[in-house]
Length: 459
Ligand SMILES: [Zn+2]
Image (spheres, helix red, strand yellow):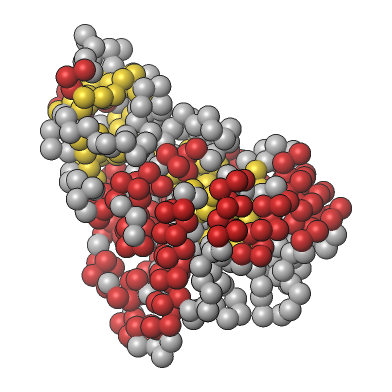
């Protein structure tokens, strides 16, 4: 199999002074038997606990053996030490809302972009053919790919939202059969789009939604729903679904793109979420990406951003490089309305977070304006702009998402604690001072091995 994937550089090479990115093509060095000790960095472990200013993290056989303050965390005899003074360690990012594109070769390049930017786990949500499902199910133990979860091919209704090419059952029995055709492939999730389209009565009916939820759970998959109305959220929670994409603010289809009159989730709905353990992946970038590059054209000259676009949609990049198009976006009559509507979704993120409802992170990477890899950092910026602290945004982007992946509550990734998989990012600057500093990446580790960041072809 031809892989565009990263060549893997053993940590031993790095410790020997090779700088992390200089291993000859195709050579992989085993991890040192004594382990590797990352010494001197500020440690943000992803739990939300206070950062450790001067830390030691010991890695052996792909996992974290110990992590904590230098004073109380010995470096084992025989371990190679890597001096990370002045840098920050944080867990690899967990993107819960991704759509991989095209075939095997393209997906490998999308994996490269994700690892380049420290996205070490991703959930693909509803656009995967059986061929893609097979690729994604194979990634958990690959140091040159993120760990991926998949919802296979999602569900809509004939003529409904995103129905083309998806499962679109007309009856409960057909819905159950189609769910089983997905779970037979081994998918982790069953995704449904519960949205209005311009033509009336094309939203999945409550009866069919309930059948999908029940059949998914009965066959070992977790149901997940894209919603943008609270009434649908309530019905789905009552049916047993607790995994939501987007929000309860109208975002897609008829009437969207302008502020709504009553954007706030009700106290009753918040309580339902708390009682059921329901959580949201609000996915801000899919909205704000509609104008972000028009307002910030300098980003389009960044070779790393260009390379991320190139892995899935060079046409989208070319579109934004057209100055006339950018001007038409920011000069449109409804531009302020669109931004005000987006602010309502950001307020949803802050309101739910402050109420104690779990708000994880995903961004619809793979849609035209949301590049793989880079886009997760932008999503974190949008959370901080929404009102979360940088620390809370990092928790949402790491451990919180990990805690919701199957087997739920048993994740061995998403934090930098003893026993966890060594998926991590080394930053040159402090993200607690400015969340944009997560973009300033020194290196990335996946499964205890340094990622070759040159694989993206951008640096
Ligand atoms: Zn999506």
